[in-house]
Amino acid sequence: MSGTAALSVEGACVALGGRSVLREVTFGLEPGEFCALIGSNGSGKTTLLRAILGFLPLAAGRIRLNGVVGAPGPIGYVPQKIALDPALPLRARDVVTLGLDGARLGLSWPSKARRIEVDRMLRAVGADGFAEQRIGLLSGGQQQRVLVAHALVRRPKLLLLDEPLANLDVRSSAEIVALLRRLSREYGAAVLLSAHDMNPLLSAMDRIVYLANGAAVAGRPEEVVRTEVLSSLYGYHVDVVRVHGRVVVVAAEAGEQIHEAVARDPVHTASVP
Ligand SMILES: Nc1ncnc2c1ncn2[C@@H]1O[C@H](COP(=O)(O)OP(=O)(O)O)[C@@H](O)[C@H]1O
Ligand SMILES: [Mg+2]
Image (cartoon, rainbow, N blue to C red):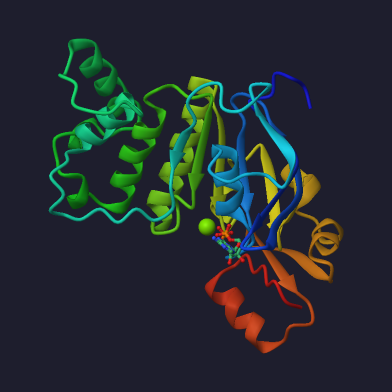
């Protein structure tokens, strides 16, 4: 991996509670690249994002941002499942302003420059129409736009999003993916977005990191999403099936239960054969 990669994860291993959760995960992202981090529940997606943020120590390996170990600048982060109470007295605009103030403690008075920057970011994510509304009263898709603006307002070169599509309908999901795709290009930021279903991301992703049981295979989607590659990752036979423009990963020997699971969740990534 070149020293100028936006993100370089090299043989990263993480153990939690005495258990190995990530094993030798290796991949890199260039500025402006849009990458999907795909895996079923418990495969290690959140753990990997937290390790990149520096919240979890590595048992082995290293993670470099812009060629440097330890974050040399801000990382944008949209965590999994934020519950925003409707009574929370914060407008969409305030959430974005908080992102700009970053880790600084205490109150700072609004300045004209800050307001211009926040307005610009609200427009960039299409949130200018509801900037003055309470965050907890907005729809899921609107909240995601505001959270993306919060994460991007300090112009990070890396943006991490943990299952941002999980609670969105098909249309909002497609809009958020298109928005992130555009912003990654405009801001030259590498985007790493976790999801358990790759289908909403098929047309957008430049790269994919596919996790199963803490191990990863990474590359261009056409290199990774293949029967032989994913079977090798899982350690048992899975079929990559393309049907009606969707990709389904099916464990061949798992019987009736799996078929039900596939109906609910098209990318079935069972951790047990
Ligand atoms: N604090 C912890 N201590 C022990 N095990 C953990 C801890 N946090 C997560 N795990 C385990 O690590 C694995 C990966 O979890 P996680 O990264 O949350 O997966 P995902 O985000 O893909 O659903 C799971 O098996 C989970 O039970
Ligand atoms: Mg998770």
